[in-house]
Length: 257
Image 1: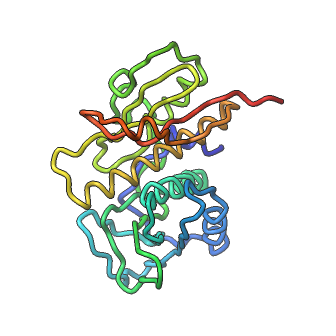
Image 2 (image 1 turned 90 degrees about the vertical axis):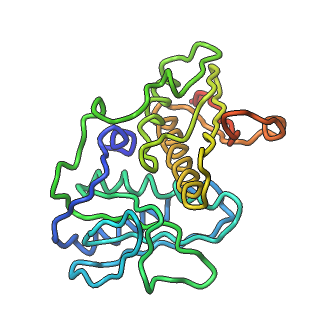
């Protein structure tokens, strides 16, 4: 199964077996992660896997989960680095799912002793073989319907609707789906919802969640044989919107073979 199919099957896993993952598979996960395209190519990132089979790691955070392994993501602190983190990480978690491995984003969770020079520890991923069901029925996913996420300005054809369905299933902090879409037949204007009680941790998790959703858009567009270009338009950036912040525009065009 490919990454697009995993979008509809992956679920967050919070209970894991104390079971070793083959060393070659751990290497494959990191290799795959280093091959994933970045949203911002100029931002340096580092990823490492921490073995916690014996439970010796010091994991601190409000949403920590006890797991046999953690993927720790580090990044330079440049504009867009949080969105970039989500964009890079989501394909890796989908890849893990396809290999039978469960995973869970741990917002504002840090592992002591994993600091790196020149980069910040941004987010931690818990992973391992699950004690619970690995896959879900997408119909059971607790997500807002597309009619609440989208304003359709023009009739969207089936490929674009399928792309939106994939974006709808993107995981987000406390499942709040902090994105809204204005949809035309060949483009989608993407907005981030405003936080009612903005705080640095909540805003950072919102930005990472936006990156995850943009990753779903990109993966689904490729599956639908459509080119996608994510570009923030100057005219839109200059406008003020009451209920959200303009992020970018996704332009779509069918592949020409």
